[in-house]
Length: 58
Image (cartoon, rainbow, N blue to C red; front, side, top):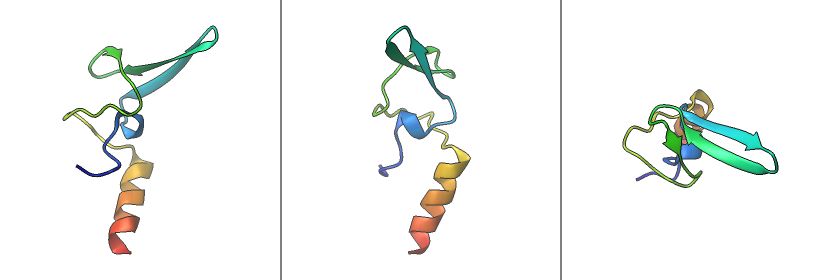
């Protein structure tokens, strides 16, 4: 697994602040997650794809 493959880099990842707490949600799966979790449905954000391509060339 590559180091980019975590929920925080996925297009379905949502971060919401409620009162004094941050809540992280997967909009695709519909439940709370953590930034470091990883699922097979991962779809990287465009900026992450660019970074992965850039690092591949180095």
